[in-house]
Length: 606
Image (tube, rainbow, N blue to C red; front, side, top):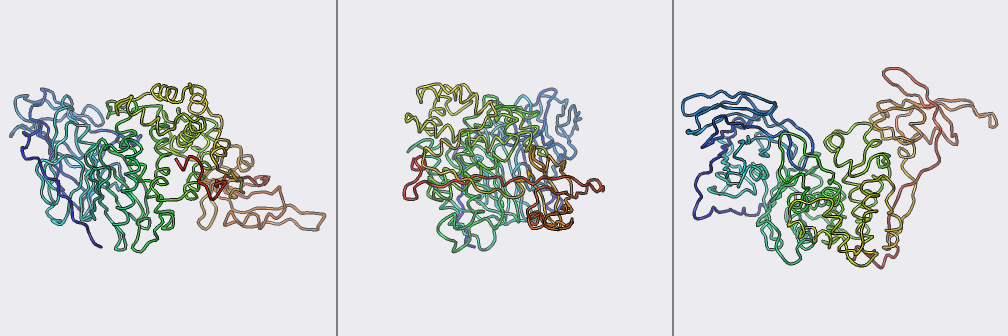
């Protein structure tokens, strides 16, 4: 594969003095998956407190990063200092405040996600929240990070969006941040990765890809990512530049995976290798495959977050508390509205057509309509409960909560189509006005409501109460039809008709039983193994009673025939149960299509 030349970010001519807080990172053992970290505090407090975060912004779950920190040692010169642990991830060190304090420790790094840290003989990656201790009382002071080339892999490069101070051609060396928040908001990629560049909105963007196969078409990925970035910048700023002077995409291609995490001037992404564009792939992104469109949507989503959550953000996130949950009821806006725009920007960038966009929107709508939890919990409450529910799904999650990503996207759609129908403004205008009102900083729900009312010429209190804080159905059908979209009802998959989600691997295992469905009424439960069915005798036709083994759910109509009442044979905790199951009439699912194939739906034409 051809690798475009790397962009070397040169240090400023006049280097600043050493920062009062300096982290030094080495690769202690590639095969042992351990980073070695040294922290130097030039002017410590008499009792200096340090801590490692318990979560990473953008991923709302307590992850306990300190469980991977190996023994912490402290010294001032040759004098050892005692590290007194006072909490699960917090230490106090009594020391002489007139002398620098040096702490040394190692961190085990073997989590391939975008949220933590990874190190082996092929690749390294870390977020500062997993590696770098916070120095209490000096969070706002300048910080430095120095990363050293591993002795065993001199061919490795380093990529990060952090400001360089003194770095070599491969990116290793000293970097600087204005404070701890900035220090840990720049993930670091290490390895022999592919690298390419483009300019969008007058700002240099870099893409680095680890794990790409030889067939990878890097030039195609750069062209398409550039279109996405330009569409996002136009939405927020028109012809003006974005609020960062460079941007970095870090993509790790793996056998099977998906995910992303936003940062102020970069994003860390994971995708399956077969979702990457390949040489000689079709010109249309949709023609390349659903996997590639999904990857482009992920790129669009995380890039949009550079505005919507990293800068324009919940007031509760004005200053992060790294030691406990940071609750907000606004994730429907920051994740949901971002989810609305991620696919819409693919359409505006010309990467997918109307049909492909409506297919993506159909999927989102059906995900919401097929979750009974939408009638139980509002999207505002789901936002607040993200720490308890979204990142800890179980077999009852679809019944008890709703995703603030998917329903939040549909709330955005409803606002946008309502505003367009009334003819005074659009959601694009609202987003730009919010950016100006909040100066690209903290916002509240009141800011959103006031901006809507000002631009639309009327209050939206009823819609906010119903769509955001209520559980009533959204008015999707009339809004879409008014914009030139047909809403077609089509037969559901059998699992959805029965109210089930199953896995099939030589047998049928129930993963989820949806409230109100036929399976729930029969008494089926998550974890049951559905072994077979029994059918009663039909005297009129002389058909005898019969029993059948099920190994695939789709075989049920074959064996049930015209029968509506059958007996399901299930295994639960090694007991065999006979459950009366009444087969329902066919249920339906949505499919969206343009009313007029010759004319784009109104809002897709902008």
